[in-house]
Image (cartoon, rainbow, N blue to C red; front, side):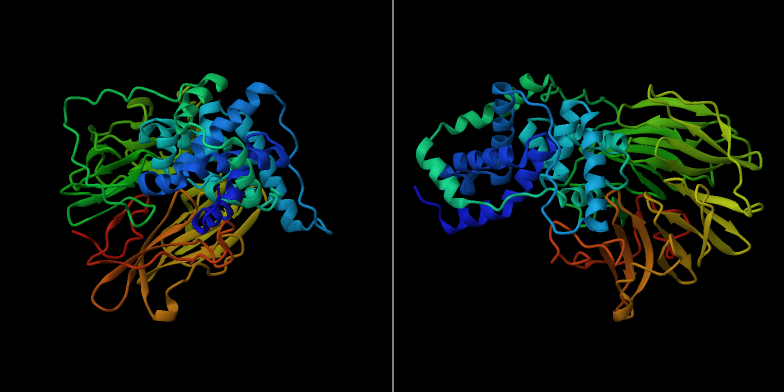
Length: 522
């Protein structure tokens, strides 16, 4: 049995992610390499058929999980310390990577087994949501829910770049195609159907149920027809009667505000009617929004908040479970500011408040938010990772109360990235991004062409979706790295922005703060 060039290239390409997955799941690098050899060897006899008929990445992941479970059941071992790369000097950069790896491993150990495996397959195994669902034999919605729960519990900011940073601290040995072929020749052709038992074996060994019955779809209203068109950016958006979800699109006549829920969206139309739509098209009527108020969400947890009309309360709603978490009294001047992890910030009765969503999905009593020194008279616009964005006297201030650091950034309205490191602002006739830590401009990918950014929103993975006036009568939709200083550690040669997607007007972007979009779609 020999390895053809395609199989050799595949082993080389997928070797490091497989080893990293196994190391983060608790194996030593040596055991991880041995299990990787076994997994690739089991693929080799049927390689041609697999390439023709299946998703080879899904089949490899099933084999890796199957081998991991069998190895643990035969010889249970405790988690071992991750091998530190053998370098002459432990640089600050490597220390940061190791620290992130330690935080990731400790956080994963606190998750239930099902969520831990789901997070690892997606963020370190480089599988998309559909592939993870296929590996685990679950609906895609359940995978999305676990990823959202895991991201919230890990509390590492945007999880994809955090995992990629941590992964680079794992010292994976080089791939050995010779070992793979030798092992395959020794074992010869095993029944491929054993891979189909990986899910059951994993569930039995881990004590986690990976096959869950899909929730009953309500009779009214009917589920919308979802066209299987992949979104070109990692942000839901609406334009000209079409709502673009993560992996499909649905027809919706009118959207004025749009937020993500981790497994779909919630939107308000021009009349204030609220609707939830899941990624598989299930639609729920959520009531109405107070005129002129803002719809906010915490996508990683699936929480949404809005103010009821006619002097009603603020509602905090769990879209993933279709249940109300609680309500907070809302005054006439009430204004929602937004979520920062489990905390919801809002303005009421002339002052700012914060209420916490507890672990049992109840609301804490509201706490009055103190104004940082020197910020009296300013208006709180956003809070992310404790960093505050405030408006006063026609300028924006980024304040880190814990460190008493304040930076001024240009703009009249803005929003912070999840980690609080960047801020999107409206500056005159365009949208700009600034490094909130030092106040310097960043993320300008379009000035060389003379193009003008007119709308933007941060994605849940720490990138930015841009709408750009390309000065040719149309607009371009892009997704870009947040900063010019960022490099995709998994693919250093990757481009900082996706290819231009042509649109004829400015869309409504999920999560974009009202006032940042410069052109109305109405």
